[in-house]
Length: 333
Ligand code: SAM
Ligand code: SF4
Image (cartoon, rainbow, N blue to C red; front, side, top):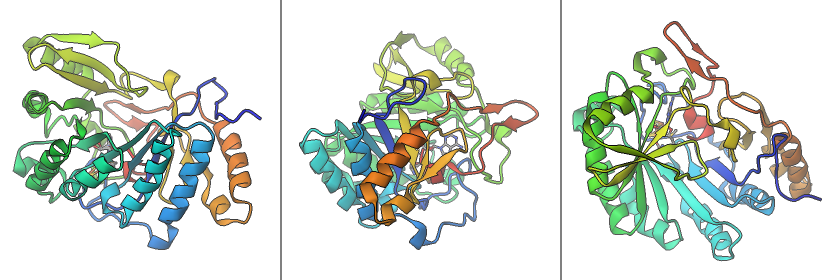
C-alpha cells in the first residue's frame, strides 16, 4: 500500500496545520466577531487525541506540523503536545514543528519552545501603534506582544512577522513595519484579507490587493524577486535597502493552489482539504472509536482523494464570493 498521501492532482500532502483551540485572547476584527461564541470544551479534541492525530498523519508522510488556532498558546497544557511532536522531530520522523501565534503569551513559552526543537515562529502583528493595535484587536495590549517578540528573539527563535494588509487601518504603516522587522532580523509577510466567517465587518472596506502595496513599496525601495519558497503560498522579494525579505500571500489576486501540499485539522477533528472550500472529513469519530489507526487511515485516503484543485475566493466592489461560513480561527490560519 502507498503510505504517502497524494491527492488526485498528484500533490503530496506533507504539511499539516493543526488548530489547538478556537479560543483567543484577542478579537482581531477581520478574524472574529466581537462577541464570538466559542465551542463547548467537550467538543475539542483532547491533547492526547491531537497527539494521536498527528501520529496518524506522520505515519502517512507528513513532515511538517504547524500549531495554530485560535491562539494556540491559550490552549491549556499545549506544551504537552509540543513535547510529543518533539519526540518525532528527534527521531527524524518530521522535519519541523512550527507555530503561528499572536505572541501575547510568547514571553512565557519562548524558551520552552526553543528547547523542544521549535526553530521558527510566525507572529501575527498588524500595527506598531499601541492605539491602532488595540483597535484592530479590539482590546489588545501591544506591549505584551513586543515583549513576546523580544523573548522569542532572545531564546534564539527565528521569527517572521505576518501582517494582514488593511486598507483603512495599517496600509500607511506598512513600510515602517517592514523597516522595524528587518532591523530585528525578522522577515515579514503581507497577507490579503480573506472572506472567512462573519465578523460583522464588510470585507471590501478592508480589502486591498497586495499588488497595490507592492507598487507603493517599489517607489521607495528596490524589490528583487527571489525563488525562495517555504512550499507555501507566499512569493518573496529581497529589499536591498532594508536587507530583509518580504513575502506576499495573495490568495485573491494570485492563485497558488497548484503547489498546495497542505491540509488543516480543526480543534474538533474536522479535516479540511482546502482552506477555501467547505468539504471536510470528520476524524474525531475514528479517534474516539474502537478501530483507531486503521479507520483513521481509511478516512485519510478517502478525504485526500477528494482534495479540490483550487479555492474559489473572490472579493470585488459589489460582493465577496466564494465566502466561507467558518472563521479563520476555526480552521487555523
Ligand atoms: N492567533 C494566531 C495568530 O493570530 O497568529 C493564530 C491563528 S490566526 C487565525 C492565523 C493568521 O490568520 C493570522 O496571521 C491572522 O492575521 C490571519 N487571519 C485571520 N483571519 C483572516 C482573514 N479573514 N483573512 C486573512 N488572514 C486572516
Ligand atoms: Fe486571535 Fe489570531 Fe484571530 Fe487575531 S487573528 S483574533 S490573534 S486567532
